Picture (cartoon, rainbow, N blue to C red):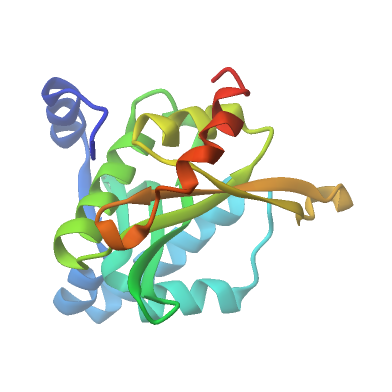
Length: 199
């Protein structure tokens, strides 16, 4: 469930690129941590249409560096995923994927799938999360199709969640359950929303 990549695809990525975890980088070198953090922020700013304030980066990267995986080609960061983990409704541990970015020239090489795989493995095995959630634009069929392959299903729809160009685009919240605490029995009723998109 956690991977939609073949072993050959994973090996190809790992032979061509190096994958890093921001917490490990911090442990090994504070200077490397600072530089890589700056480059991660630059990558996100250059490739995501939705603007984020510096406070968002500080919150995720400083508080949850273990949930930031990034891919380097030489010294260049070409992809990253950022998340967090906290208690939801005092009953279960919820992981959250905040951002996933791959630079334009590297899209099509399965790096996004690889980063999701790494993040979900961490949520499940290290963080011991009961579930993982994220939001994505309702009209972003590429992203919806990608997350559906990992087993995510639709939980709810947010009206005017994104304010890109003041358009107020709607977003779906997607959820992936790992344990029975997730309580997904009712959520499966929402699966028709995803299926209606023909993705």
